[in-house]
Image 1 (spheres, rainbow, N blue to C red):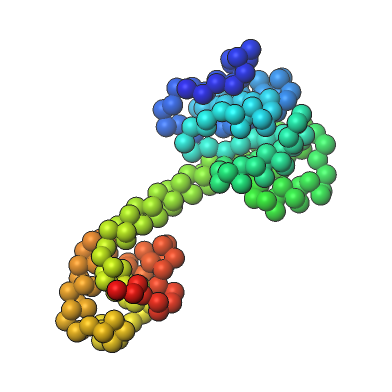
Image 2: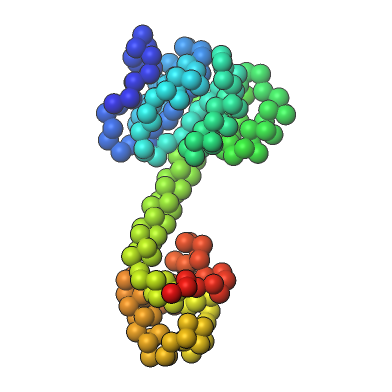
Length: 227
């Protein structure tokens, strides 16, 4: 369980981890934190609320589908500075900025850095809920894509060096005969490596294998592993 300020347990305490999406809230206005916490919990979301960027950074965040509702003007580190710090730490939580002092330069800077929305106080509850639902769906898709890529990378890493080389050349569009010439192997040997590689990767067709290679970022050139 992750907690925020001990003097505001209702605001800084997440529900027990249960796989449900979590909304992180960072706002120095206690009444706003309370309002947002109640709003998000009303639609079944877990909530973690903090009064400052520093407080959020000091906590170990749960690894669940999430988004961050962030006030742009905060004591100490600003919302923009927190956005930058999260990026440096390779934390890619979709961010929705809220502010009572919004201006065009801040909005442009926040959006260029990857914020998904920017709402000016006072805003309608439904507008914020719509933004949060969209941000959570975006994070869910990102996490699924990363999980798929990690799984494919694990399979690729288990291939032998020859099998990896064959996969790269198949993904680059070469035929068995061309791959054999490239690797200085007999064509029948290439066919054996290719069959083993396809089976290990779980590829049902060349098109399937090419999609896997694209996700892994391989096969765009003809530079197989040297063995």
